[in-house]
Length: 113
Ligand code: 5GP
Ligand code: ZN
Image (cartoon, rainbow, N blue to C red; front, side, top):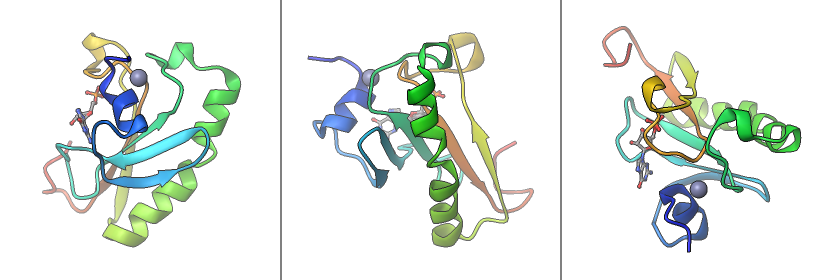
């Protein structure tokens, strides 16, 4: 059985607040949100880094980016949004299953730089 917490979120053995799911992709709320609506989008296949994604895996993930961003915009009403991906511990990665952060932005005092 996988020790990866994001694989466990995909298989349901760790609960999560789901935003979106299809055959290839799962999106859920970050447990420690940097701003209201902070969401993570992951491939269902376990790949650690951006370098490990196949073209199909990257394509399946990035093609739902506008839809997920639109849901967050409509749900939370931000005035901006950061998309962010960390690869490797020196770059700030703490969970080693590829993920794209969606960080809705509200104003200059929303706490995230
Ligand atoms: P990283 O630092 O690897 O780019 O981002 C990992 C993110 O995963 C962090 O923002 C952290 O809050 C989030 N995270 C870690 N464990 C869990 C969890 O069990 N559930 C959820 N929903 N998010 C998690
Ligand atoms: Zn995993």
